Structure formats: structure tokens, C-alpha cells
Image 1 (cartoon, rainbow, N blue to C red):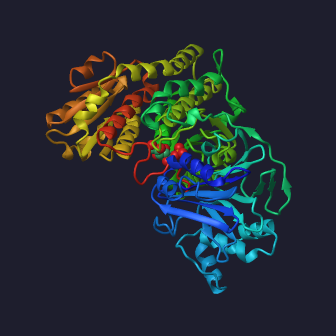
Image 2: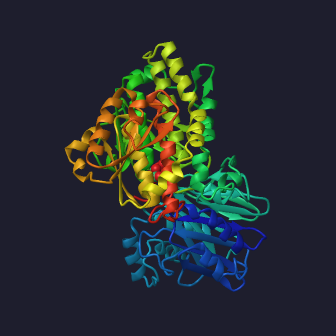
Image 3: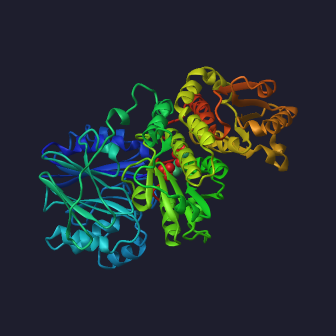
Length: 608
Ligand code: F6R
């Protein structure tokens, strides 16, 4: 997804902008550019492809002079990833430059209007209308031109704007797209993502929708949509540079897989007081919970699969019906939701466009909402009635790992919390289950430490064109996530199936040598899954099984075993997924894939 950065101060801007853009690389992009105000006006450099190309073109920024500038990484939506379509875009008179994240939905109408007034368009982007609007509205008052411009825009945007008449000023604007201001000493910054700011400042202002801001080296002023000054709190960023860097691992994804025991610990421990679970800044009373007749979990991708696994725990302990809905479907699905629905929104980034839209739609229909989110101050965290942060720290690799397992940890806590409030779990059962959840970090560490054979197993399967992941109930939820991990980073077709469904069609694809990965941690259904393994083997498939250590029924049948420590099966997805993330990682490494930035994918999907 696109990323934006801006700087104004006394230092040369271009090297800082390039550095900031590099920190946004993980979001996925296909072109990049910077614009800096110098003595001769605005200098713009942009390239399709990697930021390294931009560094080469500008001698790492040293070839561009000026202390105020903006930068952009583009992930193409309107128009191909070419140099011309890359941002920043310049006004026809060369006095203004703009970078933009998001989508201007009414750009076609605006484009026609501006063309009729004589403005020339050089790109196919939706963004270019913005810079021409600023030029059109400018009469010497940049703030007023920005306010008039944003009043004409529909859609989502985080904008960074330069004007040669105010060479040390940046203007920014936000609507439905993340934008954070970095507060420095004698210099100030903006970025679409905190990771681009952490090495320069730990003090941040989180902009809200409808706000614009003016940044100079001396200060930051935020205004509402009518131009009135708004007092904004300065928050402290708790992530450090180290947390946003690789820390000795070859890839962010591997680092993040290895960090999961600590990340899950961080999600769990602060919420435990003795034997009680304490939600962060809110409480759901027994009466609140009795007023709920169903829970809807909505999310996209892996966060949706976390919801699929969490559903089993909530239904089992609370006996409240739970439906898990893809946000992209729910938002247009005319859902049956009212004030008796509790909506749980799950999102690592807190910025996923479909998830935001589904949340808004359900809120409109009266649902109460709880968000499970990693990124503090993100749009979903702000919109939801209540937020439970996963506290996983920055997740840089595009494929989520610790984001997913910390979502599960929070969902499990929520299930136990709600069940206890409702009086649906005896104290002894509740305490035993809580102990099991709290054992997750230690057992995850064991699951990492004990599975030395995964790189060798990856060598056995990395040339396959297709893999099947099967399981029942909670094991199926794991199969869904494990198959997604495999396909997105190794580009091997991977399909997950509820094991009981195989006979209804998919078994036709099982042939001699086909590889099947069977998740076998749901003890109650194990005999059934083992029968499915036998059916696969009878047709010549090789089976890799994930099972609890020493589980003889599985060891006797599988060709290869990945074992994990025993845990209450309903919580096993958070454990069983760990070696499968590693397996996907090693397969992708064997195949020489760009693991942290898989092709066609972006970290934060801020467009529909
Ligand atoms: C897969 C992956 C994606 C995200 C999905 C939702 O590894 O990372 O499927 O889970 O795009 O993103 P968030 O959680 O940020 O809403």
C-alpha cells in the first residue's frame, strides 16, 4: 500500500525522506518519489520499481538540495506503476507538489471539471486532481486553498502538500487514511506509519479524519475542516527502532515468528490480576453480555482466520452464537444486525478498508463494537466503541504471524472473560482454562525450539505445485491460516479443507505423491481425522501431520510428524500454527522468494 513521509527542518530533506520511505517499504509498493523545495523551486525525482533506484538516481538524496520535502511509495490503483504515475505530482505552474495515500472516488468528475478549466494532466492517477485543485484555489493563502481542496474530495486521503511561496511549510490533510505527525526539536515530520518516524522522534500527534495541519520547523498547528485550531495531545511512541528492524534475522518474518512467545506474553500478562481477566479501559457487565443475542466477528485474511479459531472458544465457553464474516462480504451483505449484536472487529493494522467499512455498517445498524487491533491510534481503534490492543509490536513482514497469534490470545481471554461474567463456567474450570491460555508463550517457545527438522521437511515439499491442508473444527481453522501462509510467501498453490468435506469432491485431486498436511490436535475428533489421513494415504498421498507430542494414533499413520506440546485443544490453533508458519517460511526460502514482500501483496490494505 502507498506510504507517505514529509520533513521540514534545518537538515537536508532528501536523505531523510529516502530513509523514511525505506522504512515504509514493507507496506508493498511499485514506485517511489520525492519532492524537495530548493532555491530554484520544487525538485521532483520519481522512479518505478525499488527505492534503491531512487537512491541511485539522487546519489542517496545528496543531489537534491533543500530542507523541506515530501516522499511517497506508490502501490498502483489508478494507472500503471510508471514514472509518470508515481508521486509526487506537480501543479501546472510548478508551485505545488502533492503526495497522497488513499483513493479519490470522485476524481473522474473533478478531472473533467479541471480539464475544462485548462489544467493539463500528466498522469492517469486519481491524485493529480488534488494538486490542480490546490493551484486553482490558491490566492496567496495556502491554508484556505487546502481547506477548499479537501472540501471537494470524496474518498480517502492522507495528503502531503508543498508550496514554493512557503518554502519551509508542509500542509497535510487526513480523511479515512492514517496520518501521524512527528514532533521534533527545530524540525517536524509526517508519515503514514509510525515506523517511518521512530528513528527521528518518539513524540507523535495522531490526526483525525477531517483535520488538516501546518508544519514548519518551529511548530505544528492542527485545524478542523472549518479552519479552526484544534488542540491535539502529543503521544509517546513506545516502539523503538530495534523493534522495527531485523535484529539479526534474515527476514522480518522469521524475526516475527520467533518473537511470538514474547508478543503473546505481552498480550496476556497485563490483563491478568490474580485469577481475574481485566479488559483494558472498559468492562462488559453481565447485563451487557446478557443483552447480546449473537456475536459477529469480522475481519479480512489472517485476521478473519483468527476469528474462525476464536469462534470455537467463544461458543464453547459462553454459549452465545458466533458468526465469522469476511468484512468485504459483510459490508455489502445487508446483514441482520441490531443493538443486541456484539461486533468483534479484528485487524492487525487497524487500517484495512473493508474492515473499517464493515465496522461502520454494523455500527449504523446499532451493533456494539469491540476492536482487537495492534496499531495504536489506528482508524479501527478510534472508530470502535472499545479497543483491545494486541500489543504485538510493529509487524513489518507482509505476511502476518505474531499479529495473528496475539489476536488469538486476546480472543481466548475475551471468551473466558465473557463466560465468567455470564456465569457459564465454574470457577475451577475457568481457572484451569486460564492456566492453559497462560501456558501459551512457554509452549510456543517449545514448539519453535523442538522442530529442528522443518528446514529438511521444506526441502521435501518445496517443488510441489500444490499442497492440501486439512483438519476438523479448531484444526480446520489452523489449516486455513497455514494454507494462506504457504501460498502468499512461497507461491505454491495451497488449499485448506475441512477434513470431513474431502469426500464431497476434493478427494478427486488426491493422487500418488500428493502432499497433505493434516492438523491433528483436536483430540475429540482425532479418530475421524486419522480416518481421513488413511483415505489420503490409500490414494498415494504423503501425509505430514501436526500433533501433540507422543500422540500415537497420528504417529502410526503419518509419513512425517511435526509435534507440539500438549495444550487444551480449543487453544491449540495458537500453538499448531507456529511450526506451520516456519514450514511456509523455509519452503519460501528454498524457492528464493521475496519473503517479507511477496509479489502483489501489501501490508496494509487501505483500499477496497
Ligand atoms: C496474511 C495477511 C493478511 C491480513 C489481512 C488483514 O498473512 O497478513 O491476510 O491478515 O490483510 O489485515 P489487518 O489484520 O491489518 O486488517
